[in-house]
Length: 358
Image (cartoon, rainbow, N blue to C red; front, top):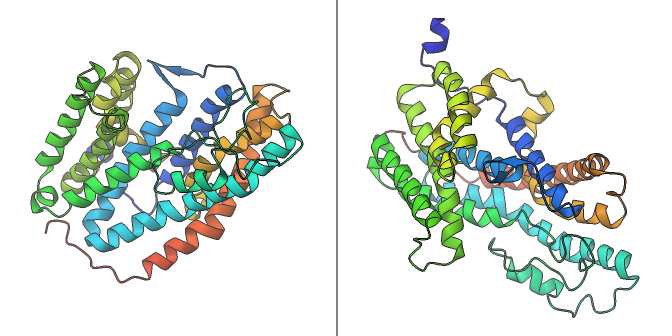
């Protein structure tokens, strides 16, 4: 066996294809949602989860890996500034565009009038205010989508952002402790604990906590699985052979083990995606421009609008092509006009570098 596959090395943070993989995952979310927004009431998937759900899982393991690296390389204040700058401005613009542009277009197209748009609950202002802090409390805006196959839901993807930010805060707190920086064991225990909590909630043992706890219990093991892999790679280096072997093992767990297959596979899935990102090339444009977040947040509202204007009448494939094209245009606009400028501004804040083993 080639020594190149077994020799530990630094993970190539500046020359991988993670931007491409995140964009592919965002596209898979769009694909899964297309079946629902087109009124088919099902979506392709396996082991009790549709492709969109598995794609979100992929997002969370990659995010756990990258966000843990960010936390260990910067001080607490800079970390929070960067995380808020990355997620909030584009999110707020998406809310505003939905309420001020997409909603009126939808209501005018479906009813022929804007009468009552500003006053019918949920009003546009209530939609923005109720969702302002990432927790999605309102999906509808008045009756603007009331006649669609998937009615009264302007964005069925945004709910995950609240739980992703909670995961950011978990790593933010953990980063204050030397043991988190020095030892892989703490994160291993936390990941195992998160898997155990997921098993308990799946068995109905949630202790009376609300639905948000159940959703966090579903997603936290994946994020911590990514965190665990970062600490392992930081300590012992990246070994391509482990990435290769992780692919079939993660696939078997995810495909055949009910409920806990995904959480148990989280570190392996992360390692597998990291390995693939080192061998699958990505276009130079995508390497420079990460439009995956914009693609994720605009896909659902574009699917609803495309359906209103008849884009689904020619079949799911044509519907997918149209929604992919218009979503990509909005994602690029979000990146160039909002996301990249805000992140550049945030990075002008002097960052206190924190030694990895401090």
